[in-house]
Amino acid sequence: MNHIKMKTIAILIFLAGFIMIGWAGTPPVKKTLSAPVQVQKPVPVNPPPEQPLGKLIITSPKPGDYLVAGREFVIQWSAEGYVPEKCVRIAYIQMPFAPFEINPRVCVNGYRWNVPANMLGDNYYIQLTTLDQKIKVRSERFSIMSGKPDLDFYSWSTIPKNPTTADRDNLKLNATIINKQAGKSVPCQARITFGPQNGNASQLVSKIFDVPTLNMGDRHTISLAWPPGASLSPGGYSFQVDLDITHVVDEQSEGNNHIDQYVLVQGLPNLVVCVKDRLEAITTKEAKLRAIVKNTGEVTSGISIARWRIEGHGTQNFNVPNLGPGQTFEIKREVIWLTGGTDNFTVEVDKNNQVRELSETDNVKNGTIKRHVWGTPVAPFDNSPKCPEYGIN
Image (cartoon, rainbow, N blue to C red; front, side, top):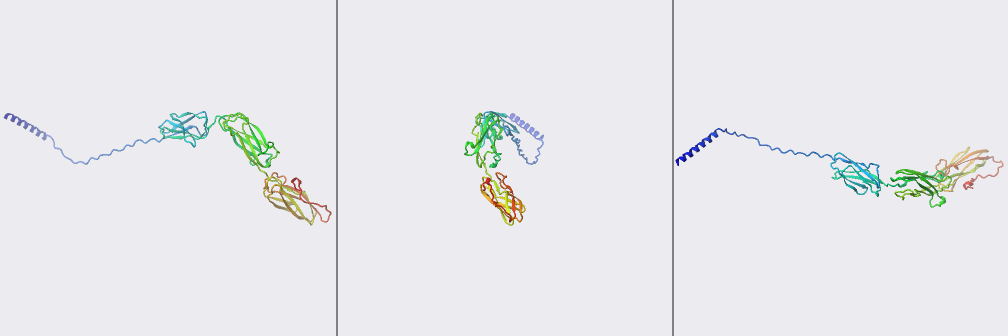
């Protein structure tokens, strides 16, 4: 028992010594003070900037293009810049209506479109929209034409523009025909008819003209001349034109093959002067000389000036008022001569050409004045104006 205790004590002493040796060989730890550790915040990383979106460019239809109903047309476009979505939706627009879809998904840069046969008119557009709806583009405006021809009137006119009864020898009536659609016409005939409104057949002037083949946009003018010397009275006239009178052209529409236009032929005044071409006077007595201005025209004249010049006695002007058809105005000169002899005179109406007339040929009259010496035998004379051609007696 004592033996065991002694052995245990020996072991404990050995372990205590071993521990002491271990402590003796380890240097002491020196304690130091340090600053607090600063924790850095993480730096945010921005995503790469997005590329700006590019655009689609429609290359067909182009400005000025037209499509033909019932035929195929190729719609084409290209991308410029960054266009991530390659597929588009195609629609057409006829203003002011909403878009109408042609194809919901096209992933190439072109599409063959069979244009519906019943689509005609202007104000059409093609619209492309990418399937992600980020890019949209609309074409220039275009028209859809018919595959048939369509004869119509491009213009009509009279020469002169505002005809009067004085234009009876140079009046022309023009009509210009145009093919408004894409089809080519065949040779046909047209007719111009002109005459008084509500007039009878004998008062109408009519002529038939040949019209050649017309492609789309081609024009052809026909012209009717009023027969020289034929009566042309003032009033309203009917200017009618008929196209394809034998119906040989298969047209898109025949509803525009006839026009009936109103033309006013204006009447004109016509001032004439009436005076005897040989007047007489007696010396030392006041001679009362007379001339008459008359409107032989169809409408009232404007205010004008008449002039009476007498050799040796100067010129006197007279204000002529408005004269209705058939109305007259008298002008007088009172002159005293002291010696016998002969003098010339001139009477002129509308000397400043202020009145547009049917004719200017009767505006001037020339004559002579015979001066008789007082006391010599003189046959009775009468200086009153007489012009039966003007109804002045």
